[in-house]
Image (cartoon, rainbow over all chains, first blue to last red; front, side, top):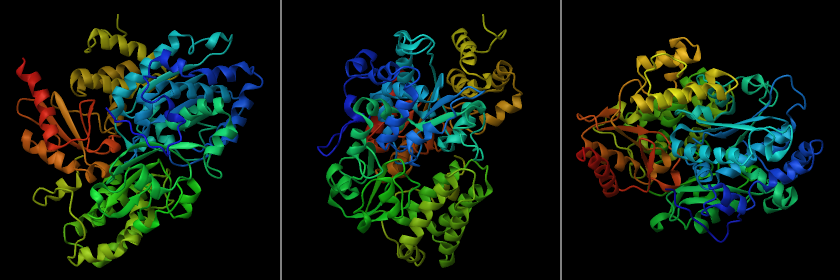
Length: 449
Length: 167
């Protein structure tokens, strides 16, 4: 069972019901649960959608899946009338390495996700929502399914919700079956339609043509779960917790070489240095910091002297990286960047869905080249080749996952070029962590997997 | 009465499938959950599973196979009764994921995607399973085990093995 952690610097919004048994519907209700959605309904059918969207806009909430798109604006893009049904799709296909925040959210407060789904549905005029969890989260699906069943039993879901004539909302829950790519919104819709999880070309965007061809709002589970809190506390009050143009708080998962790894709720704009050294207790075993992957594996690495930056979308972009999914992976001085870069690209090569050639071929050739370097067969031009391959993947794929593979690779070879050169000359930094079983290359690169 | 005559699935699962296809605006949406639940019951996605699911969803077998081959959790060969999936992705790697994987290999005497001779355990190296803050982690079937050490792995394996001895 994931261990809950806390720190005095946390600002508690999303975590306020964690550790209190809120998966039980009665407990959730006792802790102000389903109050936000009822407040919205009480505004009346006319005023309700506008009130929800205005409040969400005022909150400054930006998508917690990684892209950071303003949520209120996203909801406002859905056409008011549509010949096809509209849908809400909750992305709980959490798969970005370093990210486990939604895991805790589904476990500790599943009703917040359900209530948020209803609120999004009321805002855009949808009658149906889907909550899609990654396949590995079966035990969490069981928790969410139980919560949905309890909400139906109370009349919160189904026909005439909360006793409101003509107001219907249904939720269907399911898991995927193991595919990183499905975390991308258009691939997720394909998967939910029972197909291979390959991306769709955009435009049209999901708000216009989404699931089953209908207008669809698709949001990360944490984004959705923030909605009830925002409606209850008010958009401005939520926005004030964060930094400029980055409203509120978010769940950060700090992992790797820190003393107290865990999922912490910190205000947007909080110092990355403090998140590592104070909140997560500093580097494990008193070692020195070498680098940080600040927002899940796809974010370009930051060196030890680049961590005086605020954790929000804009400040991280300014620092040449991304806030991403909030998964902060901390590397101490013993890590070999050559090995870490190889392990990272090995993941993306495995997960590339193969739809777009630059991603399919690029990830494969980068992996092959870095494997050769790792196994002592590298040449200096390999570093240039890796950079060339990665640069040519950028912006040339249907979905952002081509970039997601290229960006960390570029970060590693640019910021740690000297370490790659030294490695090729036999001067290896760090202690190897990967095991190769007698150098069998297929074993190392996990070709079967 | 199941929608399919002579279903290969248990009556409970057949009934569940009958309902599942009605939940979605389009029947085909039930495909991935059906494949998973069928695999849970049968042990893997067999030819018979493919055929019945195709029939239930009005799809060609080929369409089911095309989807099946995309998802890493779906398998067309039996795994062990307890499938051990060790994460070696970045957060787990930094905290001993490879040590855990090697320990499992040594203890079970099998490698990646192999099954023990008695069919009881199988082993897989997997990508991120979403337990990064409690690394290193693994799953045994759908159960998570976190903050692992070789000693902790021994205890976990012994607990599962006890189930075998009990029979």
